[in-house]
Length: 190
Image (cartoon, rainbow, N blue to C red):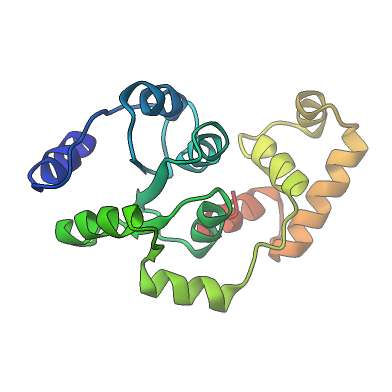
């Protein structure tokens, strides 16, 4: 419903044409390729691939397509990860609709568009202290999987998983793995 409402709003703009809509992140590249889009509007949370993963894939497969991330998850860690994935814009959904259309136009002109409050928070917070491997281990353990299950899934030893989780808990200041997952998600590191 939200996707269709956004498409309808953007479709009212005289200089913007919505040429494709998909519900899943793993459909983004194919839709972009077949419809010839100039700008892809993605959410952080999408089934299949996240918006961040889809943005990164678009950058590799179709580098001419600009990416605008529009999300309810206005977290500094997500902003940083979106920029690293190649996004040209990052806006939160509570922004006025006119701001979204303006962002699309600005991105097409080669500008970067970032919610100013979120940009200031990202600068103040700094980068995620977690390495990519630490994030992968924490993400794999977020559903309550045991160290042995995470080890099998990531082709690691259980001792290595335990060491990564210990480091993650220390870096996040958490008391346990569940709290580390919560903190990392709140900060947009996962």
